[in-house]
Image 1 (cartoon, helix red, strand yellow):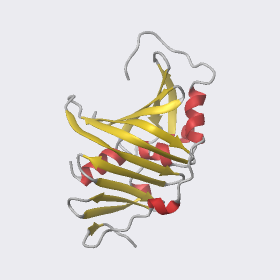
Image 2 (spheres, rainbow, N blue to C red):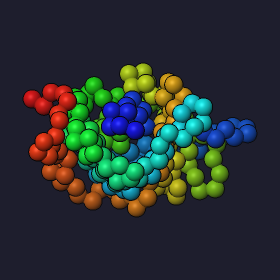
Image 3 (tube, one colour):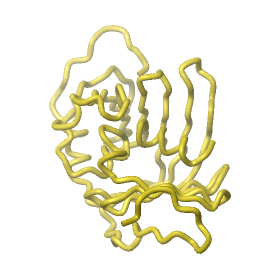
Image 4 (spheres, rainbow, N blue to C red):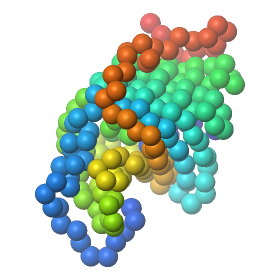
Length: 212
């Protein structure tokens, strides 16, 4: 999968139905709201799976992610190909190491109501999404986030918490494709520097887009 397709899944990205109903209880949706409201920075390892509308697995990837609010993130894909998606607060840089090519886009043209915005955006979560608790079991908290606008192509985002810690985000787009991120070794508010989100194209890189 090339970097343009990956960026589309992440940025035009990315429920197990249960019997009966599950009424909201104190501290449940507030756990979701509180988690995202309290993020200044975040870092984690991630495992990504992309599945199309017919159930066919299109891609499995692993890597590391760093978030610095507002508006900065960096996703380093380590397997099966080395790629980077870096937002510096103004632009999103999508770099494919094998192709020696980077695509540059303005942030407001890329994110919308996406998992990347959910993690790195500065707006209160209720302004961007409608939240609804979903049936779950054990120590899992499952919430459905429905975008209040349709500018990203994402129809719904599912977030899963294990013991009040974000474990998984799943995004479903208007074509029925699923992109899921499972997080491990997640650390919040560790004091990341803005320089970690500055992308400098290596010499000889083909640049697509406006860098002015």
